[in-house]
Length: 179
Image (tube, rainbow, N blue to C red; front, side, top):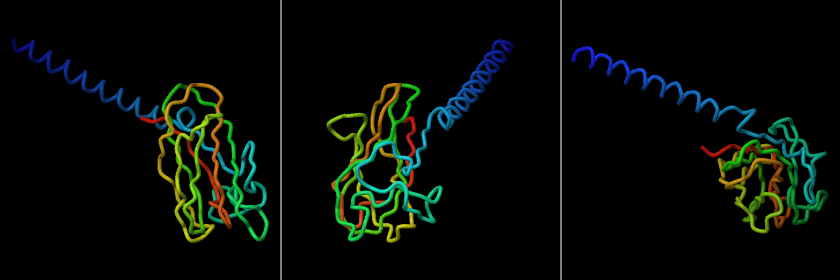
C-alpha cells in the first residue's frame, strides 16, 4: 500500500508538471508574433480613397509616419471626406481575431471607423476614436473582437464617413488570435 501511494503521488506530480509545461508551451504559442500576430503600419496601405499615406509625419508615430488625415480632404481647408483604407493580410489558421489599432486624434467629433473583413456588407466592428488632444499623442483602442476568419488571404478595411480635419491619424494595427 505504501508503494502504491508513493507511485500515485509520483504519477500525479508528474502529470501536474506536464500540464504545467504544456500550459507554458501553449502560452508561448499564443504570444509567438510570427505565427499568431500580424502588425501592419497604416501608412503601408494597399488601397485607399481617403487619407495621405505619404506625407504625414508624426514624431510620436511608430516609424515616424501615419495614414494621416483619415476622413478628410488632404489639403486646407481639410473638409470632411468619406472613404476607406484597405490592407491585405495572410491568416495562417482559421480562428477568431482581435484587432488593436493605434491612432491619434486632435478633433472633437462622434464619427466612427468601421472595420470590415473582405467585401462583407456589414462591418465586423466599429470604434469611435477618442480625442488625444494632439496629433502626436497616440493611444490604442485595446483589443476589439472582429470574429471568425478562415485561413488564407483576406483584406481588413477601415471605412469612415469623414470629419472636418480628419477622423484620426492611423499609426498601426495588430491582428491577434483570440485566446
